[in-house]
Image (cartoon, rainbow, N blue to C red; front, side, top):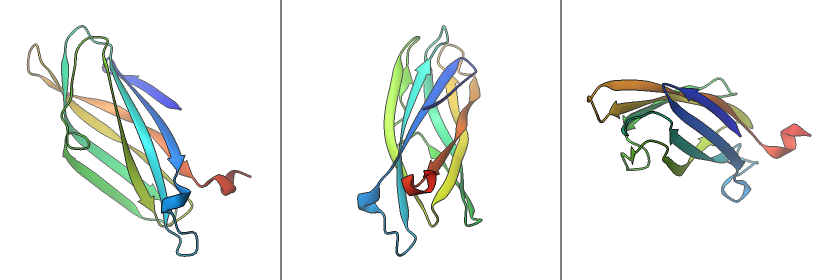
Length: 128
């Protein structure tokens, strides 16, 4: 698991290779990831946007940007956590993702960015 705290928000990431949804012959590899967001601030926050940078080791860099995460814009009170799962498809056996979340401080309506730490996606047989 990878974790990082920025702006009083802890982001933790776990990744999993999804062999049942991958096709090694066609070089299609599916990875799922579970994100845990913990608000360590003294004020409630709302996740407004996400911005991902996805690097596939075949040389492709793509960006994904939009409102919320998996169709939600969760509110987290002080000390609370929110968890969600999503997936990423790569055309090679390795890649990385990182990015930012935009949060709103619900006390003063100020927006701030939280860093999503870089994490790797590697098919299990590459680690041997």
